[in-house]
Length: 247
Image (cartoon, rainbow, N blue to C red; front, side, top):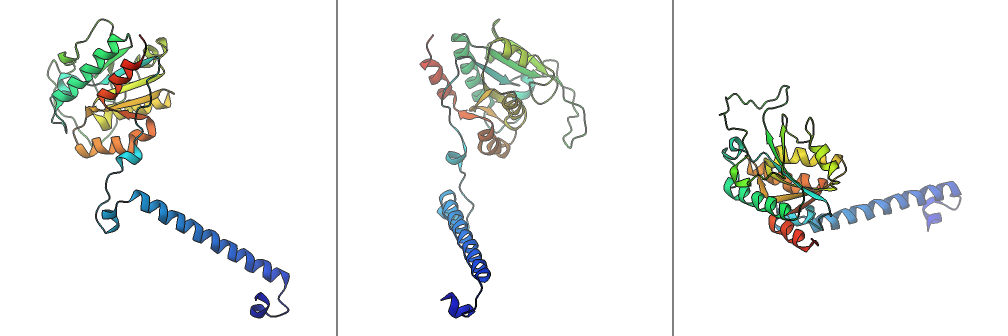
């Protein structure tokens, strides 16, 4: 058939070129088909009709698989000056779950680190905080029921690792997994999660024990950022996993 198209004197070089083109076209068709099938799996029927796609929470989050033998709870910025701000979720519920987690970690003899913020890193940003905080602004909320065995870390920036003793505390206890809760999801919690991941810790983010000033910011961190950094869980998930561990 090729001879009828190119003539009886078609060279081997011409045939080889045509074969290469045909092979390339086949590869392109295979990739396009594979892409279409993949897209069909992740886009809802409503999205195919032009509506906004449904959130792919189940597709993008990584649920808690286990707690390491030496895990630590790190609670971010649950202090009087922060929980009093308007948040996307009721602050008392977030504080209550964090307190429940802290009690469960203490009962198992695992480290509890309570972080507060007393300043902000220098540098130009679009966000301005021109106010004079009250005297008790940095005080941890009493519902956390701070115990003598707890560690308190005060930070002057968004994340809890840089410029603090957090890394030293965790290393001295042989911690391999960091469980995070607190405020704000897209700020202090996310920054600390990134730091923990970069330092080589397994990271678990307790998504119902954290909130943000913005519901959209909270959702973006939970659905888009956290799956890249570790596993997500609920308060009950973590407490259940703690209960399954031998004393």
